[in-house]
Image (tube, rainbow, N blue to C red; front, side, top):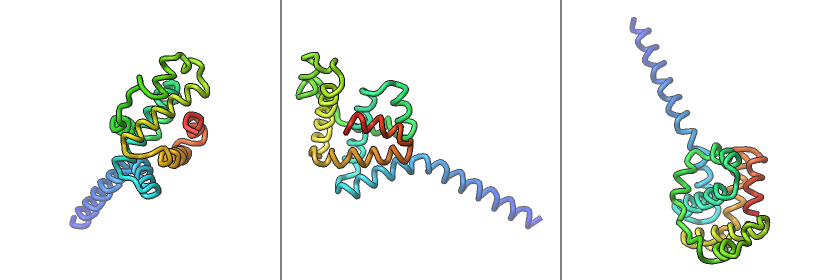
Length: 161
């Protein structure tokens, strides 16, 4: 009887431990990205999260719903990060100029310039310069390659590089 109780308690404890680790592992990849950005770029966690959010907001605005779904599936807290991205004044700067002049409808380079101007504004509001942004982007693309595969990473690389 004592053995059965001990065995049952051990089994229950094991199930709880394994279940707890599986729950935590859903966020492990994203936390690895944030930690990598903090360590590699010497930025704060808040800057890493806000910059990540700004990039994913940009992706959501510029990718099809289907393509963005592929991106967001690989990042469990993508909505939380996008909420931490600073708002940008889309009516000012190069992005606003492109929209108001109608050049953004040309797509390609004009649309990309506007998107990058908005990203630069977001990064600036987070206390990061464009040099940091240019180091930030390849780190996120590499993370997406490892988490979602080269086709999804390629979508983002096409937007940002």
